[in-house]
Structures are given as structure tokens and as C-alpha cells.
Length: 156
Image (cartoon, rainbow, N blue to C red; front, top):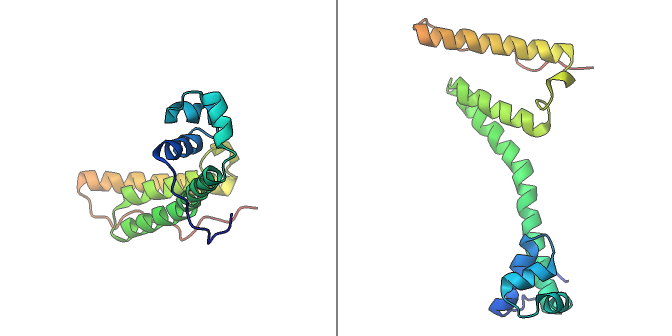
């Protein structure tokens, strides 16, 4: 389908079929049932052959793909931006949560057994620093926040 092709307006029933088809993962019979067709098995199969329906399905799938691509790269960037802002404001709990979410997203925190010795030491150090800072907050002791090394030690 050319990118500059005008969108053909579908009937409400065909639009319902297209939406159901995309949402259910491509089952034409189930989509025809959801759209209210009388003979869903036959009509679902036939509807997929119509050019206007195929184009509408392609447009919906393309729009869905754009949203998925955004949700991975941009979500990670946004989480890190918020975490860094929280850290800059010395709000360490939300900052750590943001970094934790980012680490889980990229797979760094999914399995502790996969950490090498230096990474494990870094996270142990970071946990101890956070515990000390939280203790200071509860007791009212003055504190500048946890002391965090500038970067994770390089692993081999």
C-alpha cells in the first residue's frame, strides 16, 4: 500500500471487524463474530480479501508498531531522565526506583547470578550507602545523601 494513498472510509461494521482483527491477533472468524456478522467463518475469510479492509488492517498494524517502538526506547529515556532529576533534587528513593526500572528493562537486574564480582560489589556498596542514608534520615543525623561511585565498574 503506498504511503500517500488516501484512507478509504469503511462501514461501521467493517471498521469493527478491522479493529477486532488487529486486537485479537489476526483471527478473522473471531473478528467477524465481534463485528456482528451473521456467518462469521465465511464472512471473516472473505472480508480479509477486500482491498479496503486489507489497507485498514495495514494502517492499524503500522500505527500499533509505532506505539510499540516508542514504548521501548522513549520509555527508558524518560525513566532515566526522571531518575536523574530526582537524584539531583536529593530525592534518592524515587531516583533508585527509576534506576531499578531501567536496569530491569535492559536485563541487568533480571538474574542476580549473572552479575560478575565487581558488579555485585558495586550493588552491595550502593545498598549499604542507601541503608546508611535512610538510617541518618530516621535519626535526624546530618547527611548529604549516599555516596555513589560515578559509574559501574567495567566488567570483563
